[in-house]
Amino acid sequence: MHPLASVFERIYRDGLWANGSGTGSDPANTEQYRVFIERFIVQNNIQTVVDLGCGDWRSSRLIDWSRVGYLGVDVVESVIARNQQHYQVGNIRFAHLNDEDELPHADLLIVKDVLQHLPNSEIHRMARFLRRFHLALVTNTVSSELHRPDGAVVRIEDVNTDIPTGLMRPVDVLGPPFSWPGEEVLRYSCPWPRLGAWETKSTVLIRTTFMDARG
Image (cartoon, rainbow, N blue to C red):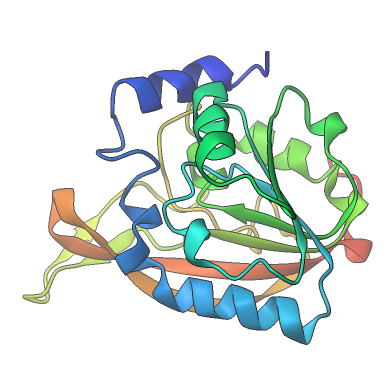
């Protein structure tokens, strides 16, 4: 079993993210992101994709994956079993993740709304296996300021502060202590209903040939 599995199994079992993978995975909140992913796949001639932390696939099922071989992986076994039952067909596969060393090589690694729930040590560890992918698209909440419609600002945890597994804080992989070499390629807003505010999401493109093996 993956060392993080029990935490995320409990989150899904107890509905701690309100509905499955959370509001950040609601189709209504991901339209810009989905359009971007489809365009990126075509423009970069992507043939194979690994989606790390694929979640319940409520939003990803609406992306056109017909051009690629897609593998969605997650540490939550019940989530993967459901995805296999409902969505696995032809070029789309799902697998339960026990160890990142088991990940196959691929043209593109997708990591959406995953790192923001991991401690900094796990984010550093991820750099060790990024090299097996030509490109990586990493998406997280990126600002500690959430904006309400009336102009009020709600502050959450500071960007890149350390947390226990399963909690949440904004992550900017381009900034310290990570400083991954990359560039922001998409920024969009997403509602946070519990706080009545909007959070800022950022997708960063990592060209993994420039990664060093950070500890």
